[in-house]
Amino acid sequence: MQYEGVLSKMETEFGSPIQYYLTFENSFLNVNQALNKYIEISFQGYQCLNCSKKKKIFRQGFCYDCFYSSPAVGDWIMRPELSTAHLGIADRDLDYETRVQLTPHVVYLALSSDVKVGVTRKTQIPTRWIDQGACEAISIVEVPNRYLAGITEVALKNHFVDKTNWRKMLQNEVLDLDMLTEKTRIFEFLPEEVKKYFNADLDEHFVMNYPVLQHPKKVTGLNLDKTPNFAGKLVGIKGQYLIFEDGTVFNVRSFEGYVVGMNII
Image (cartoon, rainbow, N blue to C red; front, side, top):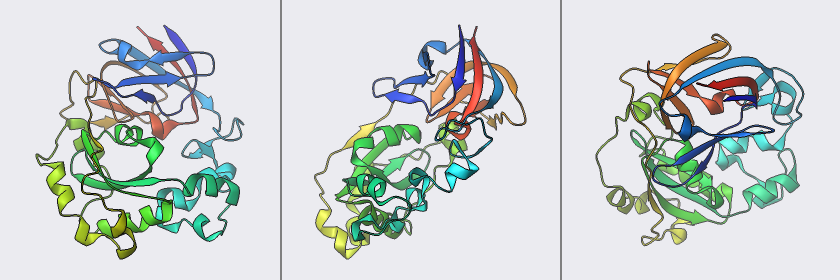
């Protein structure tokens, strides 16, 4: 089967195992069905996810101009504590920022290698955790806007990591601990204005089962700019990564906006 189109992050469906889909303009691929098969990937060009122009991708699937103008990639996306919509102050587009920032957000702990603290919109549970390759995750607090979630994350960064170790996650080197126990020691670390939102009984506790036939002992990232053509046997999918038999891993999200051809053999 042959597919061609612009890469965007894989869509997911929670299940056991999690189902993964690559969507293109005129077709889609259930990636789980490609397990144990050979996949050929060929880089063919660029197409910005925002303006759709065939311009080189700068970051997060956006060309340079769109990355520095679109409200969808403002600094507050990566640093939610910089959110200002709750004050009526615009960053790039107040209407957009109001829609995104002034909605319920969840601060969570996720276990992918170490215990990581993070922030997501409530509507993105459990998608956010799946995208990070977490094997287990639990909600800590639900707050009414992104700013409060952001300052909570900043406070908890003193006690938990805030980035996923992607190599350990793919190799399945995971700490053995009780997430519910981890949650019980959180309260004293919360900012005062957030403590009223803490709910010890909040039971959004997910365990993720990924379609991985073989975890790699060593991992090598596939970079389409350096290796425009690649072929390998797919043995796993975790987070936003395709895992191949030879230890090569391909982070689909890192190459959003790249136009590729894919052939499933």
